[in-house]
Length: 55
Image (cartoon, rainbow, N blue to C red; front, top):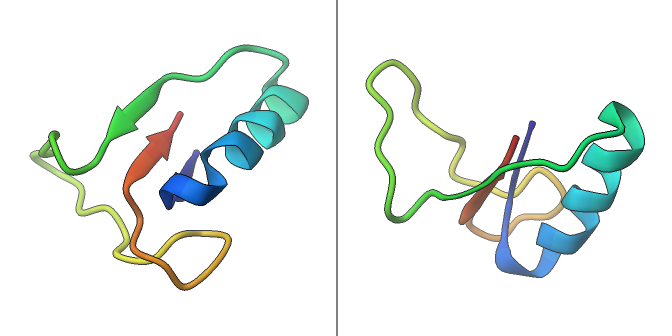
């Protein structure tokens, strides 16, 4: 699972496919709320705001 900015979505997808050998789901964090989990504010790969969850 990766929480990433818009600029790193493609890289996160590639890393996910390499690790799990399956296509991930992409969740827009600006349009989705989670009952039991607060997503990180920063991208896993840089200091930008996290906008997408690759899972």
